[in-house]
Image 1 (tube, helix red, strand yellow):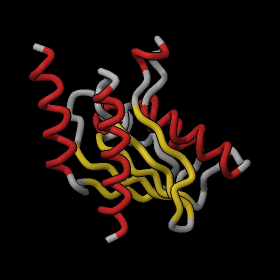
Image 2 (image 1 turned 90 degrees about the vertical axis):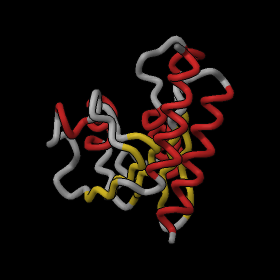
Image 3 (image 1 turned 60 degrees about the vertical axis):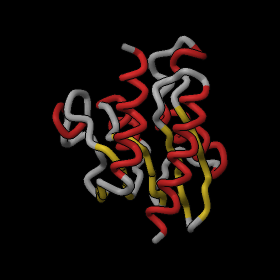
Image 4 (image 1 turned 120 degrees about the vertical axis):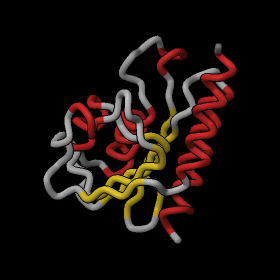
Length: 143
């Protein structure tokens, strides 16, 4: 299934974040079956609280496509987007959001359930256990 294949690529980005001692969240943006943007958390490296995986991937996709709107794109991310990232996904008019693990503490669905563009469809739970385990292990090792 394509969703699992692209989520595996997002998980690979999350592992890049983990290797850099960043919160292990990864993201890819796909258009017409091709990855057009990738990103992983860079908040520590860039000392920038906005340098989330989704923000990096959206910027890369817009650069690749030469357009600010990602209307025919699917964004795959390993953890439910925060409010900031959901807002960016909405402003970019992403057609579809696919995420692995819920984020009950900071996820957009708790705080801003209408942040996405009205035409954006959402699929959740794709490779959820892999993403959840990655996050739990990261924070367990921090304590």
